[in-house]
Length: 427
Image (tube, one colour):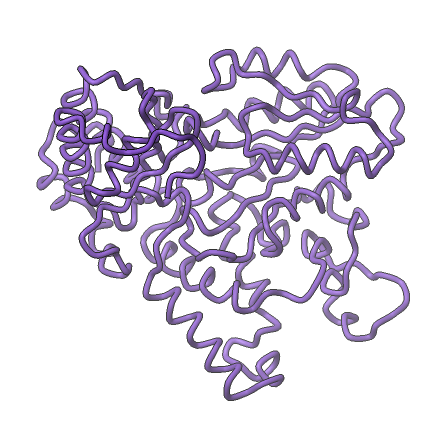
């Protein structure tokens, strides 16, 4: 499918879409156009089946599910790691399916950051990333006896939407030991150049990692090839693994063998895990960064969803459809919304765009409420952004056309003026 296809009709694009059959594998909200897959992806039949299968195993096997279930629960975390690996361009031993996004960042910081390193005790983040990453950086510095006011540098955005490469590189000074950046900015949808940033960081002796919560499942990565030091992500957005699903982390093989900063029994060598030795005996690779017992009920739907993604063609197929969808959305926005005061805050180029589009408007909160009332599910991010996130697995081009048509009608009739404009969570 050509990503330059918006000149064609939505119906023609849907007929030509090789991923169209996978839509039937999802439970779609009745009567609504769902464009919020970058907040919470929808439930698929394989994910539901995997979850119900584990519940049934728990009901019938009890404790024997750990070894007697098919597949054995003991293997689920490793199976998920192997299924995640192709999406980020990594070997399975560099992946751990574990924890949640912020907890995984804490583990990676505890493992990689060396607070006593002379002259290099500064961490770098940015002002556009999801705030929890900054909270983790701040609290980690405090735990290591360092003042965030002196040892944390947050790269500013000049326009509040995107990060400029020159501003990022200006922050990579000789006192920096480690940087954490978003692969995709969660508000504007800007896609950062992971390969270039990694190369530039390493030229300056800096470790670099990426929050991939808004990229995995929408953008292919090549962590091993690019030399990324570490990464972490959630799986309930583009990967459709469900609320509370197990997260993931990546640790480059050059860092394998480091003692885990936060040690726990599931990070012990599998053949020694139940020996309960007094000293921690780390597993090989990223598996050493596991802490507690794997969340089986949170891993099961992830595995089901990852099986579907692999069958649909993997990261490359998802990216091709994602770009075609957002290209089509951009064309419809320009054709139908040009006179209503919207500004596209997402970079236009494919190399700088993630999986969603962000529209800025002074009345964004009220417009989002009006859209939901009109049967379109977007996402509001303060102070003035409407995020539209078409999923390559279940969103049709016709859905995108219909959503923009409904938005145009809302603006023409000024229906949004009937809604409250207070900031905060838009339900």
